[in-house]
Length: 303
Image (cartoon, rainbow, N blue to C red; front, side):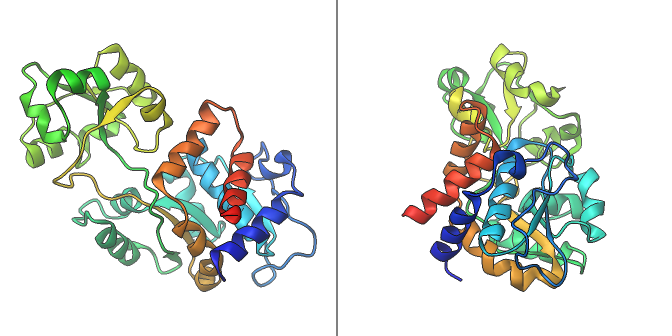
């Protein structure tokens, strides 16, 4: 099925859905599709999401595309982080989930050596349990980065992570507490780029700490809208300390061929810039994920 046909069908279907139906407040509630729609076997397709807007936007795109292709969809959004939803995926309670190739690979294999997008997806498919499958990944990526303020980058002439060696003062890296032990934390920076970084656990306030100057480098996801809206600078990673982490649907293996017909063309049309733009629409424009997803599908159909 071609992308235009899928997106056209999705755009038509979602016009009939209210935002309340598309984004239930209870993550276990069904978003609901028109009665009598086609299902996989005798079941409704369950689409899940993590507990943050960027992931929910992608989940909504998948859900609305599936509804446009004739499926009934139940939404289980806002579940939580990977430790919370992964058991449900393994048990077969969720059929489709938007994931990120590199981060999921490191979750399943802490010693993963793959770095490029192609190597990461190949390693991820080997690491997945037999009950799950990874479909084609999108160009859109949302991966860890080392990010600095524009003023700090200009003052120290920073373009790459390795350029931090030129900074004469102590450089402190901030991020979630677990970053300190991860392969791209201070130890990874030392081994890959020869950096001696301090560390401060900043949790969800990393960007605020960066702007306040209490840290000099922040571990910020590359699709975070504040990189654009606050004029932050993501340092290039020429030595691939970070794994490529592209958006990818993880689906129940028995449904993989069927889901690929709808979701592979959708992912082939999703870019990083578009994902950032949708995240900005949510944070600055106060648009809800269902509305953002509908607009994106309609825009793709119009091209």
